Length: 111
Image (cartoon, rainbow, N blue to C red; front, side, top):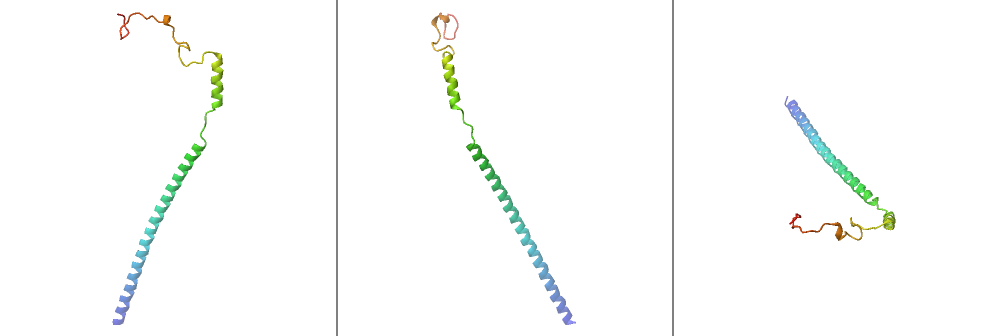
């Protein structure tokens, strides 16, 4: 009977070691899965960042530039058709007779 108790104890020891080994393997596998998930998320973030940088570089490379020749031609044609001044009153300015320049106060009222 002493032999059977030893065999049972040995069997329990082997079973306990097997359960411990299985739990350890499961723990290692969970840790590896977490690490893999983090690596995948980092890789996706890097890909998105690279895509944004590429889109910005593409937009910068394909900027539209103004047609300066057409703008200069338009300005040249306008100058030949009349006074090409930026003043609202024309190139000569405003005539002294066109405004009533009487006595007035600093606030614009009559004195």
